[in-house]
Image (tube, rainbow, N blue to C red; front, side):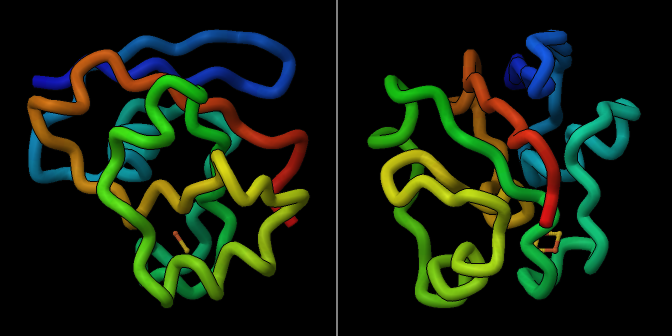
Length: 107
Ligand code: FES
């Protein structure tokens, strides 16, 4: 399991264990965490699963592919250094301790 901290825009923290193999988006959805809408269900086609990754984690995650990069242009106030689409991040044991923060709103 990987412990992931999801922080809502108002600062409310949710710390949950997510099974490797799921995505960071699925970890939020399965635990009823608000702030990640995931309208397209994980197809990288909506950008409503956008988060800001904690700075210390931004470099440690696998890099974005072109599709994620393009779709992030449609996200609400994306930050080139820290924005990611959570449906594109696969959870592994190495992500234990990951911290992500939801934007003020999803588009
Ligand atoms: Fe739609 Fe991630 S869930 S882009």
